[in-house]
Picture 1 (cartoon, rainbow, N blue to C red):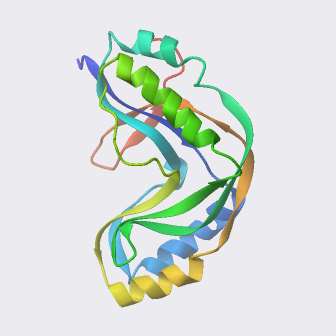
Picture 2: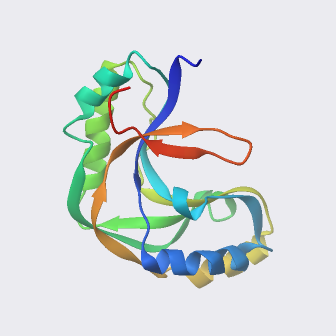
Length: 185
């Protein structure tokens, strides 16, 4: 039996517009890029990836994160596509998450403070909220640019509420299975 769980702090996020458009995006990019598309039911954004966390630590971690792991009434808009690290060398294709002020960055910072207490490594890059669609293995740049431009400013809708959760990521041969941790293990 494993003595740890592979965890991240994240938010599952879907809109009707995104779910309607997602199959079309996949078709649009099928010549432009190959890689692993995120399953519709797994669409989320991440505040922090924690990696393998000891089962003994999880109850205390949940307790420390209690004020952050909750539902927020706050508007988020999904608009346009973006790429990491750049449009000319895409490795990740994502939907931009737009907010009116910096609540997501505040949530990220609050999580960082808690994770430091547990000596969990914090990524040093600036936090950019985004909804990953595909991790790209190979691409044809001209086709990629053409497909990207079609969705560059597309309105994928928005939400008025979202929930921050501690989520287990179980890796399988069919892809990851994500499950929110609801109770103390």
